[in-house]
Image (cartoon, rainbow, N blue to C red; front, side, top):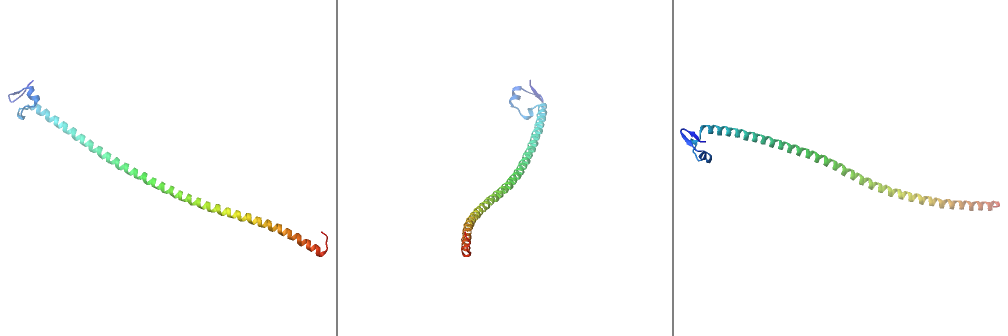
Length: 144
């Protein structure tokens, strides 16, 4: 097949190899190429628009992710602070329990010592009472 422009015949080899001037390009091919260029331009525009939309979506998702991450971090920091506070209270309670247990042990020790002293006093008092009763009985002359 050959192309004709203004009486000039072009061979398929010459056309396929691109060895011709713009004046030699047939009008039909020029129109088809212009349409194809317009079509490709529309496709490129659509792809660029779609790419811009996707970039905007990715940016929005990144911002949303960063905001959610910040909320989670803030919540975690708050929970950590509460836990640390509870741990501090727990250690204070444990210290106070230790003090109270020490005080209780001392009080029990004092109570046991007081009970021993009272038992000794009671024994001495009963002994003294018997002695006094005997002395009184001897003074009065009562028999035992």
